[in-house]
Image: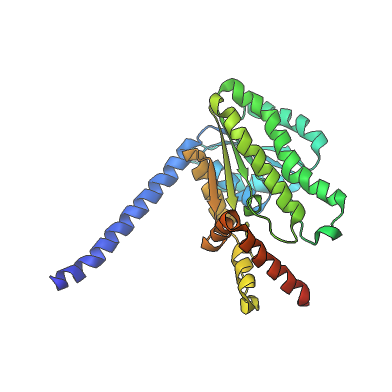
Length: 312
C-alpha cells in the first residue's frame, strides 16, 4: 500500500500540473477573446507597464488608442507592435494620440481626439503616473500641484470627458492602475501618496454612481511596478526589521505581471485587485486594525534613516 502511494504521487502531481497548465491557457485565450474588437485607450502607453498593456491588448485583437507625451516613443511602440503582430490572427493598427495628463488644459481637447479615433471608447486604462520622493518640507507647493495634476486631476478629467459616451451606450469599463500608497502612506512620498489616495477615493465613489448604467470601474493596486532592468540588490537592508519591511514593500512587481492582471481584471470585470506579497498585505491590515502600532513602526524607521548617513 505504501509503495503504491509513493508511485501514485508523481502521477498525481503531473496530473495537477497538467490541469493547471490547461486552465492557464484557457484563461489566457478567454481573456484575449474578451477584448476582441473593443476600443481600448491606454494612457502613458510609453511607460514599462503601458507597453506591456499595449502588447497584451493588441495581441487580444483590441482596437488600441495609445496615449503618451512623447511622439517619437509612441512611434517606436507602434512599430514594435506591428512587427510582432501575427498575420494569422486579426489585429488592428493602433492609433496614436499625444497626451500629457499633467497639462489639464489640453485634456478635454485630446479626449475629443480619442473619441474621434473610433467613435467610442469601450475600455479606458488610466495608467499615467508621476513619482516624487523627498521630505515634505523640501518639496515645493508647485511640485505638489504638478503631482496632483498628473496623478489625480489628469486621469479624472479624461475619465469625465469619456464617461458620457459610456453612459449613453450603457456599456464600458474604466481601469485605474493605482498603487499601494492609495491605501497607506509611506514616509518621504507625501505628494505621491496624497494623489493616489485621492484617485482611489474618486474611482471608488464613481463605481457606485455608474453601476446602474452597466459601466464597470476597476482599480488595480500593485506595490510598486519594477523596471525591466532593476532587480532587488542585497546591500545591507537586513540590518533591521523596518528595513526588511520596506525592502519587501518597495520591490514591487514586474510590468508583465501587472499587464496580465489588468487583462484578467477586464475579462472578469473585477472591481478591485491588490497585487502584493504577504508583507505589504500585512502592512495594510496593520494600518487598518492596529494603526498605532503601524505608525510606531514607520516612525521608528524614519528616525533610523535620518540618523544614518545615506550611502553614495
